[in-house]
Image (cartoon, rainbow, N blue to C red; front, side, top):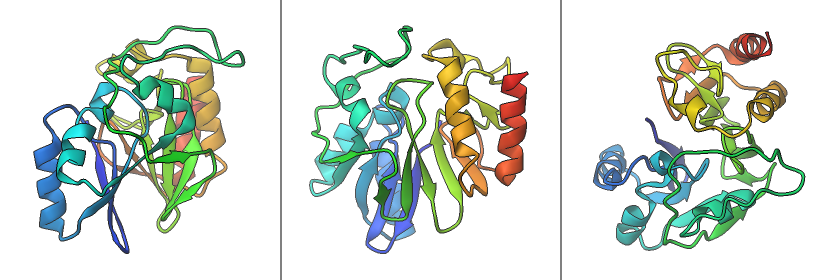
Length: 213
């Protein structure tokens, strides 16, 4: 699993925080890279993405925590999994531990946070959001796309990496989100699971075609 430090003029934006216990390693990586963590940005509410938020905030008291508005109920303790009337009425799994830290910046689809364009990409879970660095075309895709083995839409991952599909919410919505991303100038994919992969829009078109077959 991955989290990412994205350098901005004032320091780092940290995208996701991995499992509980990952905080010291993340803080050490930022220190070694020579800049402070200014913001924590969450793709979605699953444990392997929010697990170290509270630990990091305890040592970074001035850090901003940002998340998509639709994600906020899933970050409560206990999580509120109530679906909206216009959403697919399907169940979804995965650990939702919530966070004690208040979200201090609420994001909407299309917002720009520093260099990152915020793009709503639900499907894996309600409220999922991806972030496109408009400087170099890197898409921080969370679990909307998976790069284990190849670039794949969540729900169509290789047989040897079934977990994202096993806990996901709506394959139809995940595919619609992937098709939405075709409209953005993406050069490479940095997902929650797997290596960073190049390939631009051509790679995403192949992944969408495989999921649509």
